[in-house]
Image 1: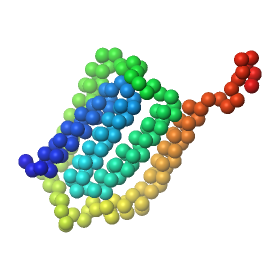
Image 2 (image 1 turned 180 degrees about the horizontal axis):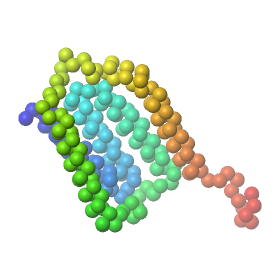
Image 3 (image 1 turned 30 degrees about the horizontal axis):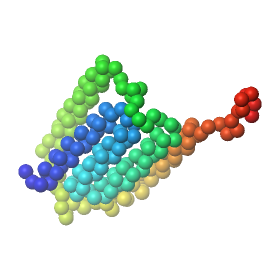
Image 4 (image 1 turned 45 degrees about the vertical axis):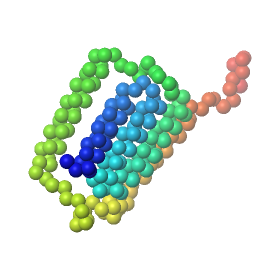
Length: 178
């Protein structure tokens, strides 16, 4: 076993553990911070696979923008910051969710192993396909419109959170008049 394989396995365990903590914690802010750890370790896996461009996009977009947007949404909508009993579900629902998650994971693993059985991934100087130039051309030629639509959607979500969190302007007095 090489050092890269050992680091990849370690990052996989960190990703899995922090992903479980995201969905099991009762603190919304802690869940967002565990999401940062999970997404950061995925970026580390991309670095180990020599996909530096994808790793930095992961850090900038997901760890930076999406988690910050999530935290702004939590703070602006006055969501409960501390532990919340509303985030806990009854025991039968947790068992059903765990069974569904394990079944989905099994299907995903079987499909991935079946799809890539016998395939080799060659990394090195001769691997031009998958370069940052190819990724940039794909993003800014054929995917620029969906990318911009997604940014407008995220902006609309942030504006909606601000509108929902604002108090009425010109609050009513004790008599009920403005």
